[in-house]
Image 1 (tube, rainbow, N blue to C red):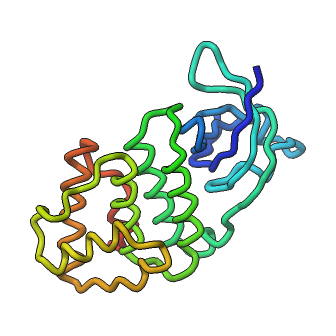
Image 2: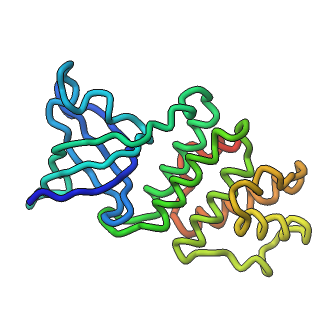
Length: 213
């Protein structure tokens, strides 16, 4: 049976000389893996439609034997081209995707997580890379996953505690205006590092680079 979905390309890499494995984030089907047969051929109908963070409508045939399904058709909706013009933005987007992959199960509906990822992809090109974008994403994702920290009891300075709350609860246009001192940034980074490690088992690769070193 052929199914349809809307999704973001989270990963794509060669399977054979002619085919790709494509991992998607979708709202209704969660994280999904497909094989795009012949996608690396010059005249493939998939050519130019399967790159990192592309948003597309697609159809696939579900496999009965594995979680790797067969991609059928792709209609491209958005490329998020601006992310490719600034390495720092691409690093931040990639870390956000890796964090979602670490924190969620495959093929589980994730409508709010999908919307959060779309929001951050739209927000990132609006300014130069800033660490508060990543910190806000971490806090907002934890909230959506039911792992929201108890802000009143976290072990940071009172002013930093207020900033943590603001990062978690503010709309994306407000986040760049939340200025953190070096001390506050250090406190928030360390708190979230420990919190994420506790809940996810280890720190997700790419966090240091996403936060600017």
